[in-house]
Length: 161
Image (cartoon, rainbow, N blue to C red):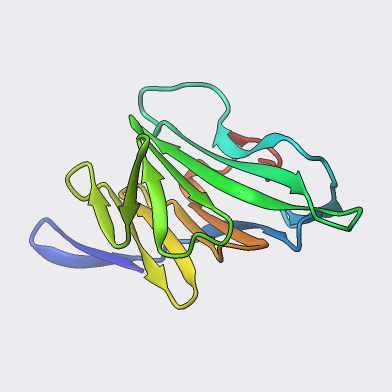
C-alpha cells in the first residue's frame, strides 16, 4: 500500500506486483504464473522493457547459467541488473559483494542518489529501485523478481509479459 497527500487529504492506493522466479537452476515461474524448466548454459534476459519508451524505466535483469559440476543441470553463475546507467553484478558464492560498473563493492550500497539500493536480506541480496523493481538473489540457485503491476504487458524476457 502506498499513501500520499492529494489535495491536502491522505489517499492510500493498494499496490500489486507480479512475481517471477528461477529456482534450482532449471525451474522457472513467469510473471503470468506459467512454470517451465529450461537447462541452457548462456546469458539470458529474465526481464526488460519490450519497447523503449521514455515514460518507462530503462532496466533489465539477466542471468548467466553455467553447467553444474558433475551434473547435467545448469546453475546460476551470476545475475546482472541494469538500471539507467548502472550495472550491478552478483556472482554465485560471493556473498555480500557485488560489482557496480566494474568496481567491486561490499553491501549495503545506495546508488544514483537513492534510486537503486542494494543490501543484505537474511542470506540473500535485495536490490530495490525507485520504480519498485525488486530482485532477491541468494548467491546460489534462487532468484525472485517483483515488478509493479503498472509494468504488466510492457516487459519481455524469460519471465514473460
